[in-house]
Length: 306
Image 1 (cartoon, one colour):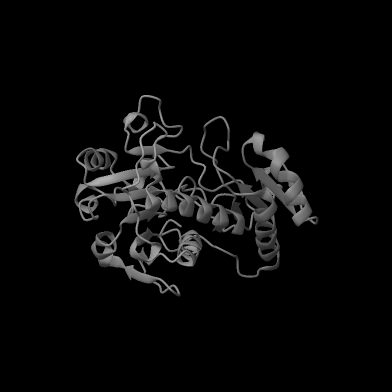
Image 2 (cartoon, helix red, strand yellow):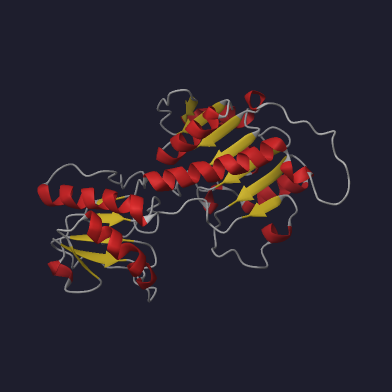
């Protein structure tokens, strides 16, 4: 099968060996006649001239396999009529679990209180994990991985998703139960995708539903939170801290107020990355399924946007 690597050139040296090892029957190409390709492996940033990729000439392509879990940059492309699959990578899920667990533990233990300035602060004793309620918005693969990690440490975990689909060990709320999910969230972890229904989901009214002093960890998408409302809630003291890994504009401009706010920690979109060694076998399996007509893994629902 002939497959186009429709991703930025800088990713070729990292991805090509892993993809070829996982799928030796594939001929992986960086360019060529669009009508000659059986599939595309796609990552945002392609084409690199800033234009929008026209999928119309790819008349033979049976699948477009994204290397990213989020597909918001491609799912609205009107020329994309081929099946689109998002990446569900066990390495990405593990990385997200480690990131969210690490920052949740930092917030839980109040580690930011212990500045190395010579002052002996021994009057701050955190509760045990069982007394610290954590809510996760988004209970897909990533949310479930984060929940499993936190449950293992003894935290009570509430999950919220639009569907409210059950997850073992987690109190899962759905749909219009979002206010209840927020009301108990001493630590709120946001892992939702960017869709029409999630943009500005955490506006001033919903941020006000969080307990006083709550910490927000956003590793989903920057569009989930109204930035002005978040800064106001932090500056007023209603919220204690925000750890932000995703932003509406990336890289985050140096003049953005998040950088200077003492109640905000900025991380540069490093919460979880797709790792070739764990993701290439997933892509290979979908390529084989596409060639044989078998059901595809992680097929994107265009109406939902993920």
